[in-house]
Length: 335
Image 1 (tube, rainbow, N blue to C red):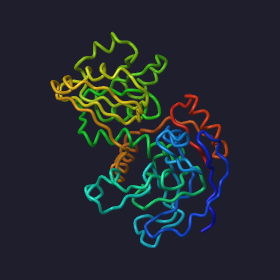
Image 2 (cartoon, rainbow, N blue to C red):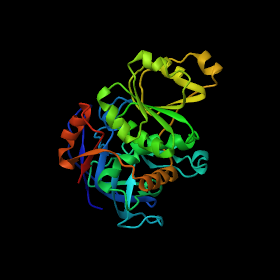
Image 3 (tube, rainbow, N blue to C red):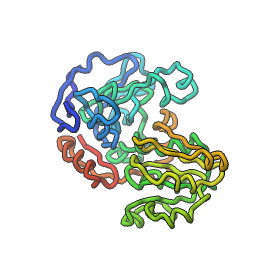
Image 4 (tube, rainbow, N blue to C red):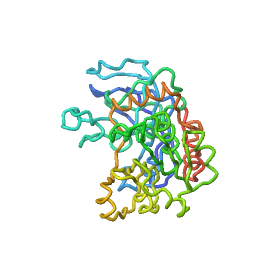
């Protein structure tokens, strides 16, 4: 195999520079993907900045990959060369632990992450275990689909895991890269959807994406009026907020669910949780099967990320655009 050409950072918050590496022989259960597009996620920024513990450099970011299968390992029978696939945060799972055997590959204790234990998709090629190379439906645009493999499955999986129903009233906190997809999913799921945003200028767009109402999350009076309303609230932001107000907004048996990586501790009083039989939870992405179901749901209902595109060679400009909070709503690099 020839060297893989990529873009890598060598220090926290460092610039990406051309980088080549020898991937070695293709492992029997792996596939190699020729990258056509790769989304940029806030998790890439967290890894670049070493926010989640020491990052190993050089780091090749990118875990929202779309491309075509370029090669398959000797044991691979379920993917074929030339097939269009996508790859997200997870690049491998053991396939024999209790979690994998239960279909929860994303909870595998020895799971491999695309940009943690391997080099990622800011490259001409990337590798993963075959179970995580998910076929892309033909009627999904490959130039826009990359963010579905991280942002999309991150907000879709809780709907499946926690039995969110069409009769439920659901709130989405934060209308960004994750939240704008959650609004679309929940609307087509049949829920009554409320968007919580601190940006009044996003109201019209949030309603266009699927919200039935938009609430200013900084308006304490507006928040107080929502007490006891929601069956499910999905938190997509990674910053501290007025958590007691959101807990109060849950109906009895309501669930407050995190997919945004809030780094600060979340203070929760026990009595409101006990007396309302409320739940606090979180989840990481989803299994390969749930990802495939999400893609089919997107294809059926015309759901797609709102994206801005940069050439792969301008990856630093794209990172700066995202870091400045200017992305609307996901940034995709094109090879």
